[in-house]
View 1 (tube, rainbow, N blue to C red):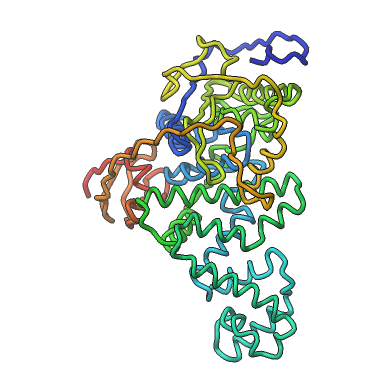
View 2 (cartoon, rainbow, N blue to C red):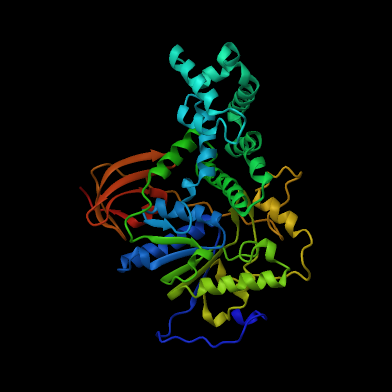
Length: 458
C-alpha cells in the first residue's frame, strides 16, 4: 500500500516473526454493527485467554470513539481512551447534557450553574451569588428567582441578560414536544455554543464542534432503539446509566486511540475502523496529492501497529455528526492485494471505488460545514460527504429476551459464571448487574450482551 506514495524512499520491510494470517476486511451495515463486531471479536479473544490490553482500536477522528465506547460499555469490556478523554467526559458533551437536564428540570441547580454563563452571556459569579442568596432567603429555586429577576432590585442591573437566558430556556422547554433530535438542533442554535466555537476556528474548537454534532448521533440512535416512543427524560436516564457504567479496570484495558496517538506503539491485535473515503482519507485531503500521501502514511502507521492480527472495518452506511451518509470504501484498501484480505460481512460482495479527476475546489467550505455539523451560521446545510448516495436501510435487530431476574445464575461466554444482582428494564432493553466469580461486578445491556449469556439456574 505504501509503495503507491511517490514521495518516499524505497525500502524493503522484513520481520523475524512467523508468517501471519491475512488482514480481515469487515464491511458493516452501520456504525453500530461495526462497533459491535469489534466488541464481539475482542470478547472472543478474551475467551481464548488473551488480555484486554492485547487489543487496540484505532480511528482517524476523535468522534469515531463514540459508538465504540458505547459498544464497549454495553458489553462490559474495560477500555481506556488514550491521548484524549472519553466521549461523555468531554467538556462540551457535559455542557450539552447540562442544557438538556435544565430543559427537562429547571430546578437542577448544579447543571443550571454550569450553563447560565456558558457560552459567556455577561451573567457573572456575583450576579449568580446574589440570585442564590435571594433563593435561599425566600425558599425558592435558583431558576425561579432568575425567571422573576425583575422583581428584585439586586438583579435589575443584569435584568436584560438574565431574561434573555430564561426566555431561551422557556422556549426550549416549550419545544419538548418536538422530536428529540429537533429539540437538540434548536438547543445548539439558540444556546450560541456553536457560534462561540465558530468564532475562533482552531483545531480544538473544530473537534469540540464535531463532538457536539456527534451527540446527535446518540440521540437519533436512542430514539430508533425505542421505536420512536421516548421522552427527553428517558434519554437522560439512559445517559446517566451509561455514564455510571464502568469503563476502566486497572491496566488491563482495550486501548482506544486516534492513529496519531498510536505512533511508536504496538499491539498484538489492532482494529482500524472507519476506513471510508471522507473519513480516512479525510475530506480535506481528497484531490490534494500531498495530503493524500500524508493520509496514506498515517494508514501505513496504523497497519504497522499490529503485531499479530489486523482488522480493517468500514460501514455501508454511517451516522456521523447526526447525519447518515454512505461513503465509498477507503481508496487505501484498494491498494492492498485481494489475496492478502479475508473479506467478511458485506465486504464479501464487490464494492465500488472511484477517485476524483481533479481537486475539489470547495473542499474547505464543505470541510468547515462538516466540522460544524451543519450548525454553521454560514447559511444552508451542505451534505457531509463528497459523494453521497441513498443509504441502504439497516436491518432491524432481532427481538431480545428480557427474561432475567435478580438471584438467577448465568454464565457469560467471556466472563464466566455469575449471579444477577439486579435487572432493570430500560424501554425495549434491560440493564443487568452481575457479580462474576472472576471478573467482579459488571453492568451489561441485554441487547448487546444477551447473546453471550446463558442461564444455569439458581
